[in-house]
Length: 230
Image (cartoon, rainbow, N blue to C red):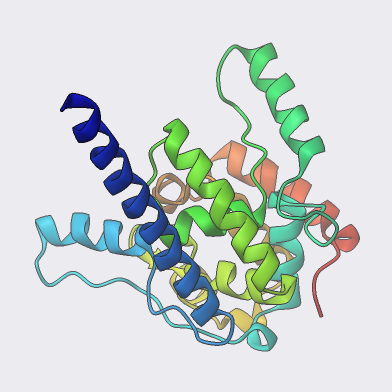
């Protein structure tokens, strides 16, 4: 009796897991040529903001890839994923380097996640660091890389990542921080926005932090070497 119950429970679990993967696959397939209206991270932040203010809204507006400053594209690739165009979703060299840095420091100081991995997390997952979440992130990353072009991955990424408290996407970030459009960002402005990505809510309130300005300078120096989709 117990074995029969265990088999049924296992079958139900397998069906649920496969159903969830199919749900994600369907969304990725749809987003190949349709723009996501929101993301898991956006929904999570909106719920938190509305706990204090029921009328709170996110700052977000979708803009096409060709309307976003080339400076911002190069800055993000230089900052987050220098081998974006050449890898298959996972930068194994970057992962190894990050692991070595973390081991040397004795704590997590580098992640090694690619733009594709970050997009997978932003679209579907929470900010937790469980083994299950990392496995699911890897599965979604493979889906994104197999079904979308690099240009499309970067386009969605630039439109959904967080850039401050309730600020999402390049359009909102450009207007929020510089009162300009995403198409008119200078190299310095773009480099600073890219430097904010790892900790955007902190840098929203610490815009002249020494570490932020130093990182922005490094990114700006590397931008000319960054290869981005046309």
